[in-house]
Length: 348
Image 1 (cartoon, rainbow, N blue to C red):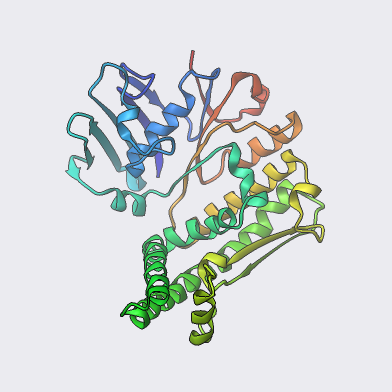
Image 2 (tube, rainbow, N blue to C red):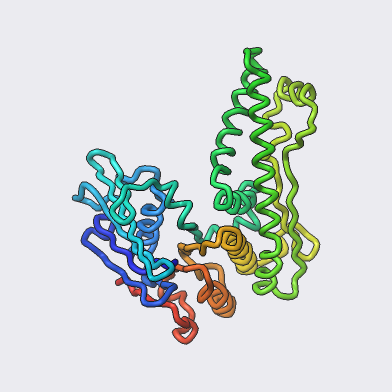
């Protein structure tokens, strides 16, 4: 399946209707800062996910003087079938409407059918950021394989907070909340372990292409121990500890040439190459398990990359099974001869 047409109106700088047809599978959007590159990606993401990666208030996306915005995305499916997804947000009523082929549908259904991911220059946090950012890669894979994964994470946090307060305040229901937290934690760790198992082969294949000659080792350690002694963790909570054995303490570790000090060992550009390899491995894992290709919204692609790395990474990410919609400043593009079969759209 491939995204083939996008139409937007009333979204930020796109006050009047704007229609883009993808002649080739991948699309490269180029233009100076403030031209609307990120807004175009935001419009696609909001249509498919029902939320923006920029703001929690969709009213802020509406163009000045307008009362609503709308967008439509057309997909080419297998067997010459097509699907169109339309999204409209009425700012006055603060009401969103989503339809697929004229029938009302939920964003949960859309997420299940069309894997989408938004990445930007902060992608390097996958390798050098906080533990939660690294765990997020596994959680993204786990969600697309088992859609209850995000709900389980939310339920665990709720049950854990309730249990902790019951312990500290000597309130009833302590053991019930603990059982709920522990049971949910086991399910989360099982999902992550499956995600990691499907990810590892893809990591070995993809990362070596972007950082050849480096020794890169990945490992995952579960943060929750189902055999943990209940009395012991209860005592730690009473002493003021915030976390016990928990999936919020799980670690996805990356070691390069024997060290986990990524920032001190790799340049910013090398970190980005490694991060791209990891993210593409995650998408390959999802595709292999679900049979669905991933649609990638890649904002500010060339930042932190020298011309040679830019050409290598661009060649690696385009022309594959995952559809790429990439935004870049015109001054940062690779030479025209390196664009291959990628469509281009120059925003004035």
